[in-house]
Image 1: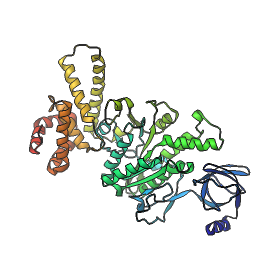
Image 2: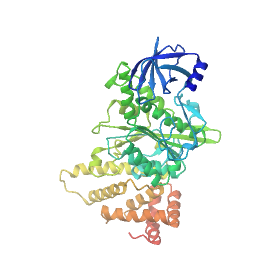
Image 3: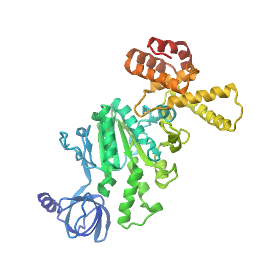
Length: 492
């Protein structure tokens, strides 16, 4: 009440609640109220002005309990903001910066920032030139990403999207990138699983987990991605590269639709509010690669959206496709066939990632893409029972080995240099007589040696970084590849 009285003394305006709905209230008597301004009720709850009409204002209430009719309300003369700071690294918080795990020692940062700001202008942005490694071979080699890119992760439920995102966070956290995982409308179990993964991988001190739970107020879930972006901008301004995962914006859109329908706003396509495109576009536009005095810092954003039965033509899905720099499509049919990750490279797109690749990686990307297209045609032709020549058989065998190479469990992440080395061994034909299972065992031995034997890792790195094209790399592999493996004690 002291805070209420102090704010009233400052703003000189007090209103009353006239109507109340779930996570919403309508108030009158605040003539100076502005859109997005924070208000406070006499009971201590706070809310944000979302829509103002003559004589009445609609308020998003950040409380699970409804506001009673007649409750006094005052202006705060401030917009909705959250505390930001390095203190949040390693913490599990809600969109307002409050700890969800009360057992950990914590000091609330003094610095605060508004959650809704204008995106940076074009003059402040820079061309994306640095690659962003995910640790997932299929993505790094066929759908490369760049730091500052906004890449949509799309697919049905339970097709491996979250596993891929966790692998990417792990890969980037090991490189010193600040990672923010925003769970929007998720169950406590799912959030706990993600947190346990970060703790197990010993990267929690590089990660902020911001969670809006499924049973939180609609308004709290609505502001979650904006709060996460604000946190990312703080670290970006401090000079850190940031990886931001928004999981997921389809859920966010559904909750925003529920709020709008409760407010009796005119429904648009599929009953979504008319400004849903603007809302998501303004959010994602805050990511990118930005210039500063001593170089560049980037916010790489990976928004997630779900599909139903593989339909990527939904309203929210196509909206997000149009405002991002490409998408990684997780195919439910490939998942059913046992492919991990179940990424459909033919339906996935990256618009700026290839410009960050070295000449060698660009050459491999072109060669792989052409080969996989050819293999797809040959497989379709072979289904008719036509006799196959030795060339076709070799193509199909190599295709099976490439598929086995891309088959990667969620516990495995690979450096790009190691990915290229393994691919070169397959492409040169070192394992041409091996079955896919034997190939996986051989690759597993090489991965272990790469992680445990510094001299072998140094040799692989020198070979990869020295060569400029796939042909020159294959020449070196032919001369030194098998010997390198034998010297490292690896059986092939």
